[in-house]
Image 1 (cartoon, helix red, strand yellow):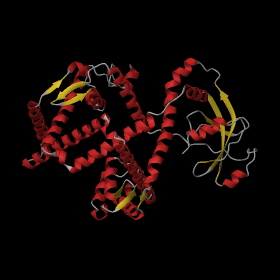
Image 2 (cartoon, rainbow, N blue to C red):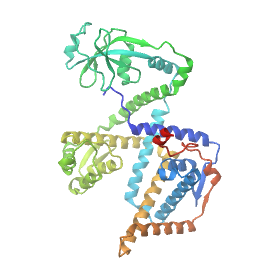
Image 3 (cartoon, rainbow, N blue to C red):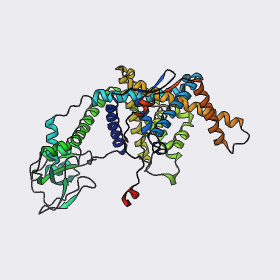
Image 4 (cartoon, one colour):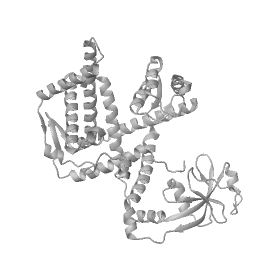
Length: 462
């Protein structure tokens, strides 16, 4: 696809990373620990993460109330997790397997930082060149051919060949004597096409460009330059230029690094097992429910009930072999979009999902070889997931015990809330808990000084 597409989750993640870094910079001179539960320390970073993902019902309460509620939730989670450890949950193989998945995800993230993000250097010259392109408007004709032989016969006189918009949604106008042309700016297209266009002179035809399906000949019919280029304007756009350049460089480095790591794996996806899995995914969905969406937990659970195929091999690679059950386990923890347009699209989606999840596993193995599992960020991630999984299991067990002891379950939720509250209070009474309120209230969050509740309508009326 020629047009750059932005994933909303990626945009949110970049935003989250941005404010986290800025908050950390502001918090550098303050005590790192905001509370302790026995020997367990709660850091600023752990608290900030929990607060930023707290529900609006919490964050709109006012800073001190919201902070107190958030730190108490963290303390409760830790107390329940410690209770789970005392019950031997740390020997639960199912929890170990889930924790290992998240450990590996954290290792892959550290591998990315080490080999992709950290090595990127952006020069002043690159940013100034990008700024110059940003201030340039291109008027482009795009001629599309199905056959390479058609391309070879083209001459400089291409007026009679129809223009095809370069991508869906591009602004197309009728321009002077050239007919329909696309208006293109820097960062409208993928880097490969962009480099071709910005190197062309006016009226020059490009070399054939193959997009994987068809051949393209591009022609610049005109260029417009913003002559008011100032240092102030450059510096005002410096950060956005840097972000785009970094994203592109990281993409290229990551792609090449992944190819280097994956090539020796010789990944083979077993056709017979893939066909069986496709049939199961397809048949579990009622025809009336077929739409463009990912499988639900019902599909995953339904497939997991087919024990006769669960342990058939589906992916063979150098670092290990996966059964259908291995794939389903990883897929449930990291769902990947599968389109239900047709049975073939389901098969294609499953094949892609298998390849991505195996890739992540292989990258985690590489990270382990490099000792990245000992990085503080990985250790913290494992701690987070162990606490979450152990505390949730304690709550599930308490709920199950309560259901078995009640003759009447009409007020089950009320009984459970009261029982959990009493249980947590008992754990608190047995534990040594300290909260450094001065350190806690000094933590800077992304909404510092701003109202959390925003109403566009009332703001407009006022």
